[in-house]
Image (tube, rainbow, N blue to C red; front, side, top):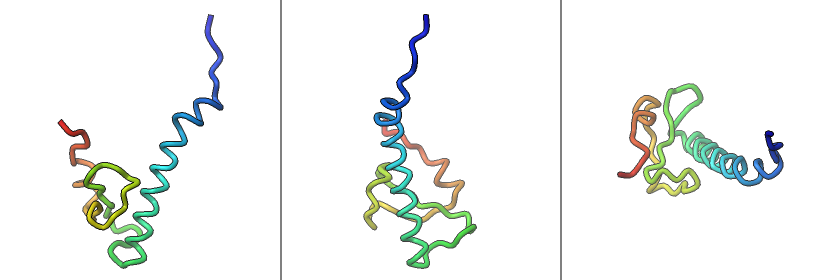
Length: 77
């Protein structure tokens, strides 16, 4: 017999973290747009060097192409 999923608990534990991370990524992008470093549709992304999207300090973020950012390894070995 299958157990019913607790969607409320699932949202609170799993999805909240991802929503906060995504919001932080958008804030970093918006800040770079305001500073004139990137434009909408330019194919650039904000790279978080320590892989923490909530750390938007200038020393942690840099602008790179979409291809370069997505091909960068994310796991520390």
